[in-house]
Length: 371
Image (tube, rainbow, N blue to C red; front, side):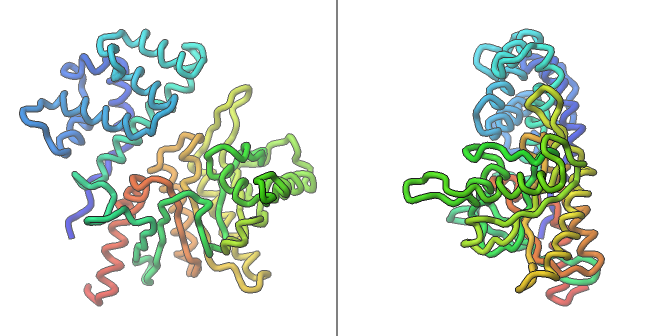
C-alpha cells in the first residue's frame, strides 16, 4: 500500500491564499506561494504549464468545489477569478465581494472575508489529500456511501464507520450528535444544516405534510425552561439530550445537542473553538455512558458530524482533529462504543480516511497477524 499523501497545513495554505487575494491571479508569477506551487505540482499537469498557471488552475478547482451560492461568488471576486476581474485592484475586488453579501466593505473585511478565504484554503487542502485523479468513487461504479475503517488503537481493533450522506438517512444508530448554538435555538426546519435537518426529520407530519409535532424543538425548549436558560447562553460544550422523534422509526433513539457555536453579538455569524468541540464530545460520551446504563436495551452506538465545520467556520481538519481527540481518549480508556461519522461530501470522507490511514494500516496488519 502506498503511503498517504502529505496533508498540507491549513494555516500555511490560508496565508498563501491571502497573498493571492492581495496580488490577484494576474500577479501570480510575482507572488511567493511555495506551498500552493507544491500542491499544484502534484496534480495532473497540462502540457507546457508553468508553476503560476498550475496554481491558478488549483485555485479555480478549489473555488469550484465550494458548491455555488454567495460563498463561491464572493470567493471568485475575492481572488479575481470572476470573468473580467483578473486585473482589478484588491480594493475593487473586496468591494464587489462585499456587495454579494450585502454588507459594508469594512464588515466584509473583518468577518465574511475571513470565512471566504478559509473555505478556499479548506478546498485546496481537500484537493491535496486526494490521490491524483481520484474521484471518491469505486472502480466502474458509484462512490460508496458507507466506509468501514479498521483501526488499531491501544492494543485492540476498532471499527469506525463513515457515512457519506445526509444525516436524516442514518439508520440503527442509537445516538446522533447535533451541533447547536449556546442558546440551544434551533434553525428553521427548512434550512440545510445538521441541526435543521434533524429537527425536520424528527417532526411528525400529517398526510399532507403539515406539521403535527415538532418533537426535537419542543423538547429543547422544555429543557431550557426547566433549567432557567431561555434567552440566556449556556456554556460552550454543554450537551442536552432529546428524543429523536420520528427518527425513532429508523432506529435512532436519542439526539445529543452539543453547544459549540457562540453567536457574535448583533450579527448572523458564529465563533467555534476546537477546545469547545473536544469538551462537548467528551461530555456527550459521558452522557452516553449514563443513559446507556438506564436504557433497555443499552445504547451502544454514536454518530458524529464535523462539529463547527459548517457556518461555524472551522476547517474540517480542525473539526475532525478536535472530535478525534475526544473519541480516541474515550476508546483509550477501554470504552466499547460503536463509532460513526457522517459527512455529506466524499471529499470530507476522503479526508477522514486519510487522517486515519496510519491507524487503518496498522489495523490491517494486526488482522493479518503481521508485526
